[in-house]
Image 1: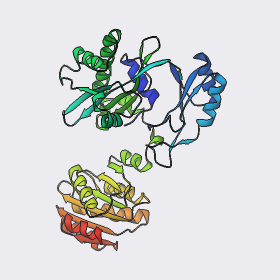
Image 2: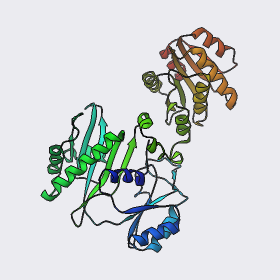
Image 3: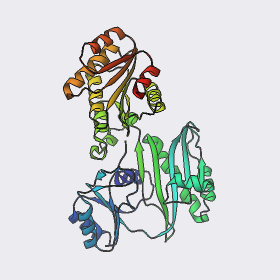
Image 4: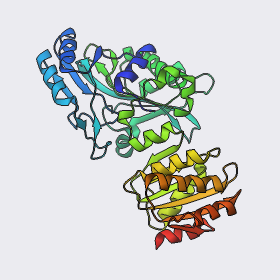
Length: 382
């Protein structure tokens, strides 16, 4: 789950990660009052779940409260389009009004999960303000990483080694190490999948300040953090992905035209690979889960049919706990409810497979039944 910058910074402040002074505004009048409180000169930042706000005009440096109100009026109620949002953009409902800090140097600091390390790693770079992928591609020597001990956490000597690697001044080594340790503690204790500060700046008076902050939270751990569940902003999410989350269905929308209904994440990935292998493009990743009933399958299939890009559907189900007849009844119910009958290639194996196939044969739907995934893929090629 993504959270807004102002929400991320509030959490960072609780862990003693220094952030600029600022408040959230939902109207031009509130932006004016906050900017006046900050002394006039401030930064107006659109709060959206996307990077690239600066290039898209979502961040404005203003000199007076009047300018802050004008910038707020121009941003609020619009849809901000960045390289991460797609052409439709995302709505701007709130703004973060912050003090304008004098910047002497920009750094990068993040904690993320690294599959190669089988756990969290801490990454730092003296090339702050840039996409870390771009830095890694063109200047890999500027990217420094350490792997914390899974029990002891990030140790002070590791934080200092990152500071030395970035060439920080001696007086900043210990503050940076403490900041990195605090960010790592936030990452672990709040069950994050990403905690990123970009840029982490050295101010003109020699302080470290998290000028921007990003946190992604592990959806599967939110049951431990009821307070963090309240930070979700559904308006910033893809509508179909939001519906899937509410239905407890694992769904990610993609840009193809083949809707995929599968049970099991591994089987779903293999199915998508097979679709791509024959030159087609999957429209989604969807794992309906092993304990779904007729209603849950119907909701999942309704979500697939709700994507206007879906022209055909591939169903690949191995009936174990989830029976094939349950899947079949859910598919039929969804098609009747939505009033759509797209071409479907269905591969079912396992529990109650004969009953499931019989349900589909008698449904009147445009269904082609196959026995293997390879055969299903060949049907998509035609």
